[in-house]
Length: 197
Image (cartoon, rainbow, N blue to C red; front, side):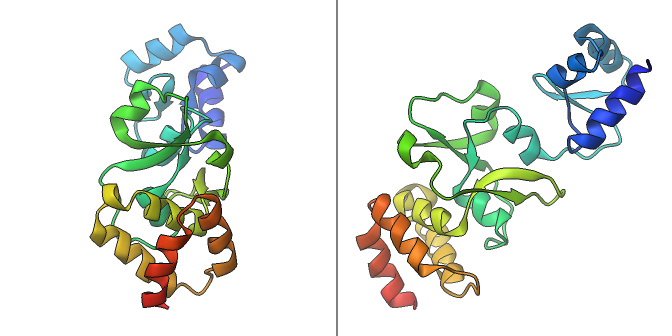
């Protein structure tokens, strides 16, 4: 069995990322990964994650593979929905209260926490610019998150998101209203939408 061929197959099936656990399931040991890394045949991008030197790293995919307890939210979700023209300076994720994301996630992302019962509200999957699928919140949930965190995200970002949402052809105001009630931001939402719609 050729380790490089195994790793190429893994990379192909997993958006370019080779994870230690997947590699060992396919018979490529940690020590072999370490050896290939030293030989510059693969590059380590995070703990337990490698890519081939000629591959472009999909940061969002790399982050999402580090924990199933995080969902892309706020500015990153707006970006993935195509509602924000700016690539976020720092990625934003939401985790359930009581879950502490790893150091590597905290080093690269702004982490918000929410009650576990609201964690899956509006959870969906979106495609990264590199064409990989990652967990993120739908548009309506993202707008509610922006309202909840309006003091942290900044007025300009928050208002720009609301304006773009109000003009969005696929907006679902009924769903937005339902989420807003569950997340207790319905009153604030109404004040802003009356001005925009």
